[in-house]
Amino acid sequence: MKIALVGARGTGKSTLATALQGTFQTQTQAFACTVVDQLSQEPYRSYDLVLLMGLDLPSALDPDHRQMVEKTDHQLRQFMDTHVIPYAVVYGSGQARVDHAFQTIEYHRSRAANRRSLARKASEWQWCCDTCSDAACEHRLFTALVSRPPSSVRP
Image (cartoon, rainbow, N blue to C red; front, side):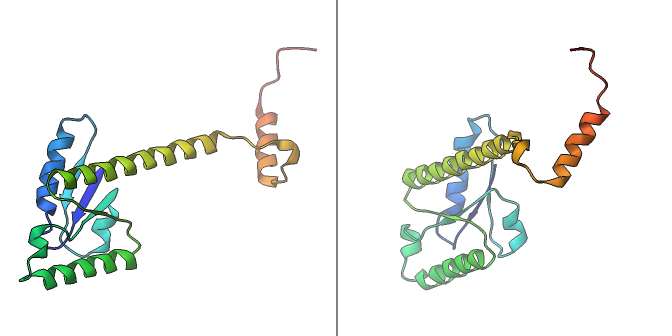
């Protein structure tokens, strides 16, 4: 799973990346957590999940650079909304932020697994041919039946 961490300067994205890498190194699942700084649509498309850092850390609340942090956060949210890039906002301080990010990642991972499972089940389902009016489907079925070798069982 590839995860992008984005946020304004001082919002803890590098600290969170280090903490998450440490958490996931003990697991056998493939995992990559990257801090992304540029506003470009394509890099975001290559990630399975984008986590945006909330503005609740003390460094982000520093009055000297609060306006810059809020402006950057607004630009990031606007960019991702404009380009329809789904993201989750992570809040909390210290271990609480790591736990929140981990819960978000696990939720995303389980949802992705459920979607794959449902897609697999949907592709295994067969329509009842008695009520089907799909000419292409009937042609494939008839062609497959005609191309079979004759059955060795006689009535």
